Amino acid sequence: MTNRYEKSQTTYKKLFGDDVPAAYATDPDIQDILSRFVFGEVFYQGNLDDKQRELVTLVVLATNQTLPQLKAHAHAALNVGLTPIEIKEAIYQCAPYLGFPKTLSSISVINEVFAERNITLPLESQKQVGENDRFEKGLAVQVEIFGDTIKKNRESASPDQKHMQDYLSAFCFGDFYTRKGLDLKTRELLPLCMLSALGGAESQVKAHVRGNLNVGNDKETMIAAITHCLPYMGFPRTLNALGCINEIIPE
Image (cartoon, rainbow, N blue to C red; front, side, top):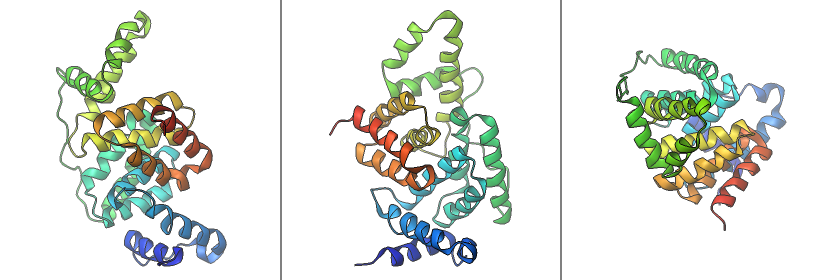
């Protein structure tokens, strides 16, 4: 049976080629623990493919604003076959959850990688809504993901906060979820990982567990995605996220 070391070597080469981590020169023990755990163990847990794993990694690194690692994994994402559009769309999807400053910082890093790889910018637009239909189309996607809860939330919103419900429909879902480049199952799985990595957003994590179920991501897939987040966000937030999944989908 292939051991953790051999698995980590195979995975690392697939992601990063022949580059040797700089930490091996200064901190070989921590780099060895990292490599064997992340690339020899976690990468082999669950039902995600390499492309899904790298998309999850990108958005969690964007959430954490660990930009050197984001740059390395942007290269890795291209190496495992993700398209520039898929990578950009995953980062764009961060905006409603992380805010624009973190998203724009992450986009700058991705653009550096694309320049190094001779990828011409801007990429083809994936926009599918205009000013006159972004709310309507966003609300339709929102209802598809979350069902009758959306109508109840809109009806119960106080007059001085109704604009937040409008922003959710038109901005979060209209401007982003309707875009081409990623399918709906992926667009809903990535926010589950972002919100889990943020910490303190357990009510939203639970809502997106339900949303993932509604678009066809089963419990096994969600557990695999959150497990893959572990090396990047640590045990406390990982266990909190798994607790949310188990509360909504009991054993």
